Image (cartoon, rainbow over all chains, first blue to last red):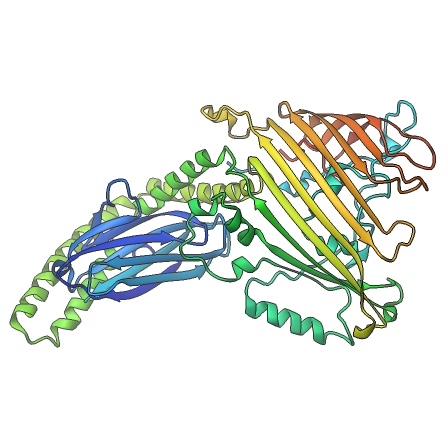
Length: 117
Length: 435
């Protein structure tokens, strides 16, 4: 059973290499919200001064791990919810995009689980 | 920060029956309260009366097609994407013979597509180019040329509106956003990454069943062991943390976030600083619904520059419902009507200075100049200048007084003197009566 019971859920994969992997999460469509990131049950703090960017560490340490990205999106501008997780540091850039529709003004829970290959 | 809906904001000048009259109001009498029920796309004048035009009537309309056509649609199709637009148009085209009658459509093309990189901060960018794109709305409306004889043909109107300069975010936004993110933090604070951990553990177990490389198997076995230990610890922590108090705190945070979201969206329409809205509309008439007989009839262009200052002390919590503001509004409207031989074109230019001193009291002065009177054969320009004071007595009720000079008219009665009560129906006052 899901811990957070998110309104929107998305699973993706990202192939890592030997370089450091970096993550940027963007809440789109002019909406506002917050994001937290967990790896192995530990919360990862964002890069100082950049609340939407995370340094995840060397790619070789991430292989076989799963990153959990939890966002709360407030539909202040659009009922169309879109959250993008953009990864760099692997052989290629990668994105994971979660989309959905808010049916009210309630905050929308968005969860992305990213498997590192 | 819940607020009552602004739906009740539209207050009205009450009918003469409740007016406490000084001298009999000569002109500029407030229009009657809005009709209780307006039939779909009922024909209605584009302005309250030919010579009773105030600054608010000259602002760039939200839906120029409806305004230039003089209709108040009971329902408007507002498709959110290209597919829905196509379906709506096909449905309208198939709903009857010839052109669809009494049809109204409004679209904002920018929002047809998703904008994953448009952050909240970028949404409030003041770039004119981006603002024009984001706020561009296109309206289309149809109505019978003769309301009671649809067979006479159809009028079709097309309108566009956009904010060239959107203004900057309302001064209250930063405080509300801070409260919103605090509520979000509480909601996220209940998470511990258990979903990802369980997913990782299950995936490692599945891989272990197929992987043969010894080093990889050892790594996966170690990962499973670590994950099992963490899952057990986090499940205990989660159970311990899910107290009734914690659940109540999250429920309150969710309710706060909901209310703040609505308030922030509302404030998007109440920006501060300089703003410029422009709109244009065009009507074509199709007698007998014949495309070959179609011709342009009416056209209009509006420009509405405005400047708002909100002198609130935002450091004080009790100022979040700040009602004090100073507004300077300019209006320019040009109308052309080829079907009106005696008055084929006219323009109005004017402005208003409105000072809401505090929640209950507002003062304003407005002036409008038009190229010639509507009800006189004179070709000389005429103007209307009116001062207005409003005092809110209670929720939904205010006292108002106005004094000034109206446009020249056939009765030569141009003095405006009026004191009355407004009970929250019809025309919008400066003061918000809903809160």
